[in-house]
Structures are given as structure tokens and as C-alpha cells.
Amino acid sequence: MPGAPAHHREHGFANTNPDYVRASRLVRLRYFVGRMLGTTFAPKHLDLPRVDNDGRALAANTTDATITWVGHSTLLVQLDGVNVLIDPQWSERASPVSFAGPRRMTPPGLDFDRLPPIHVVLVSHDHYDHLDVATVRRLAEHHHPRFVVPLGFRAWFADLGIGDVHELDWWGRHVERGLTFTCVPAQHFSARTPFDRDRTLWCGYVVRVDGVTIYFAGDSGYAPHFAEIGARFPSIDVALLPIGAYEPRWFMSPVHMNPDDAVRAHRDLRPRLSLGMHFGTFQLTDEAIDEPIHALERARATHGVSAEAFRVLDFGESLVAGK
Image (cartoon, rainbow, N blue to C red; front, side, top):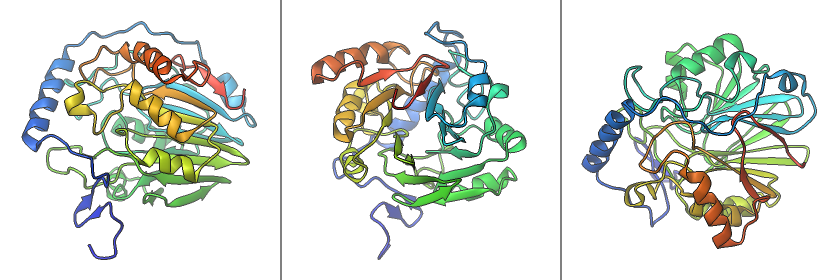
């Protein structure tokens, strides 16, 4: 496509890192079908640390820059009285069907009905653990938010009867309620069926207001874009980095970081604090669902990063940025 950005293709999008190589379509299909069958009968519950969050403090918060981990990649970010929900997923399965696929093993850290009024919803990509039809419908019905999404999503939302959608390309910006949202690159892919691969864009986001900068990486393999984001946004307060769904490495490393990769991304970004996410909720890949916590501890020691600089939240835990 002459004159188009390097990540644009005639019928979709692509990663631009020259070192990016993925397994063949047949190998990917066989792996994902196997995982779908294997996770259907996974254990129903997992006992991971959580806090009792009834949502009352969140509803009353109109000043503090606060991040609350609901689970997996679902986070509530509160800045200047604006409530931003990222990659919302409250369903029991991350799957196109209700009877099979990865089952939620840890309940959400905040009940949906305890959410404060949601003003903006950010969606990083279209995979079922990040974009859930039932949750999106509930948000549209009860909160009427503005959905900020990557390119190619408008038609998907229109099919649900949702029109308040703003699409962004990589490095595109949108200002809403005084917050600036920048869509930033990630190294991943998109697909909700075997027939629509890479038709929609994938991304992360940088959210800024009054000197506070929050970076959400979405799903991504480790790649040079982290250093570029760190250079463009040199004062990130909190980086939200995925640390789970990474085994086997021969298959997952192009699109999912392991904790060692995430610590390297942390060093590229140079945030004041990084928080691990994308773990502990759905059994998506081959490592134990709680293994990322232990692997993060080893990765911090390897790279000389303190536990105060890169940590995880308990389910339902809220953190005030800057404290």
C-alpha cells in the first residue's frame, strides 16, 4: 500500500519487527484447538491473594490517580475523576462459546455491579480474554462509555448496536474529559475466528493527565517498540506489563512476554513502577497459572530490579500512583 504506514496491509495489519516470525497457520490452529479442549476441563478455582474491594472507595474517588486490578488484563484506572476501564472481561470463559474454552479460575477482584460510573473503555485487541461480548454489552447498557479502540473495530461494535466508538492507529491520540489517550505499538496479532486473522489492529495505550502517565502494554512479545515508547514518554509513572501465557516459548515468544522479557521491557521503558498483569485468571498456555509470580521474582534478581520497582497487585487491590 504506497504511502501507508509500515504496519498497514491491504486487508489488515502486520508487525514490523524484522525478527518477528510465527509458526505456520496449521501449527497455530492445532495448538489453539488443543488448548481449547484442554482448558475446558481445567480446575474451576485457584486460591490467589485478593483483597476485599466493595467498590465504595472507588466510587468516592474523584482526585487520586488510582489503579485497581480486577484480574487478567482488566484494570480500572482513575485519573482526575475520570474512570477508565481497560480490556474488560467479567465472563466465566474467555471463549466464543459458553461450554468450552478457558474457564475463569479466579473470580474478578471487583464485582461488575460495584464499578463506579465508567466514562472510557480501552480495548487493546480482539482476543476473547480481552474483548468479551457479554461484558461490552453490559457496559454499554449500564454505563454508556466512550470506547477507544484500535483500527478496524467500529463494525464489530456497530453489530452490537454500539456507536460511541473512537478508532486509533498507532501513535494516534484522542482527548476525552481532559485525558489524552495515545495508541502505541504492540507485537501481537488479532483473530476471533480462523478466517479473520490480523483484520483489526492490536495496540497498547499511554494515558496522560496533569503530569501523571500510565502505560498499558496490551499483549505483546518483547520487541524494540518498548524502547521507542520509553523514549517518546520519558516519565512513565506506572507501566502495566503482561507476565503470563508464555509457554511453550518456541510458540509464544513472538507474541507473549515471559517475566524475564517483561523485566527487560521495564528497563527499556524506565517507569517509576511496573505492575504485572495477564496471569492468574485463565489457563491459556502450558505454564502453571501461578508460575508467573515466581518467575517474576527470579527475573527481578537476574536483572537487578527491586520488588518495589516491579510487583504484582492482589486481585481487587487498588494502588494510588505516586504512593
